[in-house]
Length: 196
Image (cartoon, rainbow, N blue to C red; front, top):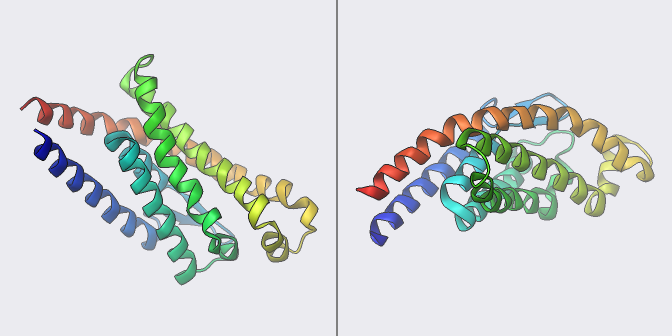
């Protein structure tokens, strides 16, 4: 049984990382380019992976997303790419998304249906990314952001939050709808395999 689970685990994690690689570099599959920024939808893949694979898998997938985001900003730069050259901005929030979703989803399942649990976990994962990116930019890349936007450093937090609000709303809606729709059948398949 343990070998069977390990094979399942490795297969799913490899598949999710492959999907993340495609989403990172193919326009409109993981990021919606808006010129000044990119609205993220790739976080849904990380949230789903964290729900399926738990904390360790969530950490691996989240870290993979962060590394791919850093590479993407290096090879396909946008106006704001320089703030993501800092690994604390590019990687740490993504790692936390995978871990936090993996921790809260089983707790949510004690109180809500699978659909509601998936929707809430999706929103929490999305907000985790938005909030932590904002905090990391403020603490570790605000000078770079101020220079890029030609604004005083003292106004960085307000300006960045104002810019990210639109992204966060769209990203939360996408995660709330897609996460339960995709995870419910995948969890059912996993349960059937575990019973065999």
